Each structure stands twice: as structure tokens, then as C-alpha cells.
Image (cartoon, rainbow, N blue to C red; front, side, top):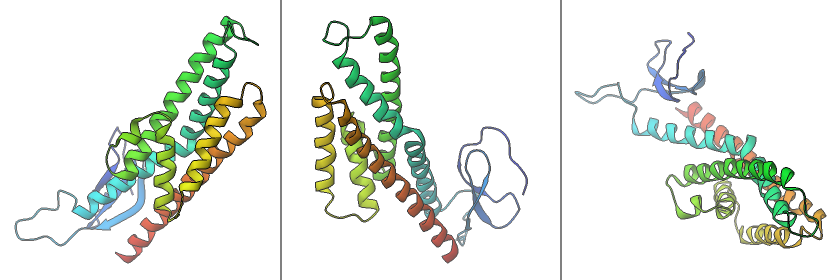
Length: 216
């Protein structure tokens, strides 16, 4: 199959091999995900994807958002969050303060990481819901929304208790980190659990796509 260069957006395109099917271009290379052309009605054209094809594009975008969340979004968010809380506790003028020369660049790093994590969580919630919603754009809230939606997609029932635990651990870290820095271990467990859910959902979506391709 021939290589394709240039900034072609990811999506479904006619198979470059000439076969009568669509093939997914992931933005850098042709994937193995294909779908046969739908039967054409009189006067119809094969130049545009069918409704099923459009659904495949949406799934591909959601999968990309989840991969970004897994690869750097979760880590960026929680490291940035921990840095922000630590800087508030030790900002110049407070007890156990650090120097302003050190605090200022650390604050820039903390805000940058937090923004990267926030955008990653927002995009994941938007992709999983299929639309923008209030809980996708509210900072901190969108991390819990992502956990809820991912768990729902994985078929996890009665997830309220786990979300409550995550919320209590997050609030506990903000309140207790100044005197009990070891409480960060519990915050790290929240991040690890989100990473696990994200990984499992990515695997489930890929497996589901493979089963549909075999059935088509």
C-alpha cells in the first residue's frame, strides 16, 4: 500500500489499494481498519461515507482523545494539581515558605500541567458523551465526570461509592497535605485508578472495532 504524506486529517477515505472499501487514515499512516462500501441507491455516489462510516470516525476521535488522556493528560493533571496545592501551602509569606525565585517558575509549570490535564479530560468527556456538557468544561469536576463516563462505558454499575471516595481523597489532600504530605499517596491512587479505567476502555473499544470489522 502506498504511503501518504502531508497534513491529511484523520478519517475514513477510499482505500488507496483500489479495493471497494473505506480505510482509516490515522493522521500519519493507513490503519488496518476498513469498511466495505454500502450498496448504492440509484443516483447515489460513493464519494461520501455512509452513516456507519461517520460513526466510525466519531469512535476514532474518541479513541484519540482517550489515548491523549492516558499518555499524558492524567499525569499532567495530577502533578500540576499537587504542585498548585503545595505552592499555596508554601508560598512566600506563609509558614515554611519557599523563595519567590523558586515559587514563580514552579507556579508556571504547575499551571501549564494543569491546563494540559484539564483540556485532556474535557476532550475525553466530550468524546465519550458525543457532545459538550457542563461537567466536561468545569475544572476538577471533569475528572470525576470522566471517571463516571468511562466506568459506564465499561459496564461498571454502582460507581457512586468509588466517585465519592475519589472526591473525599481529593478534598482530603487539599486540606491535609500541609501537615501530612504522605497523603499524596492516596491522591496518586486516584490517578492510577483513572489510568486503569482509561486503558481498559481503550482496549475494549479496539476489541469492539475488530469484532465489527470481522462481522462486516
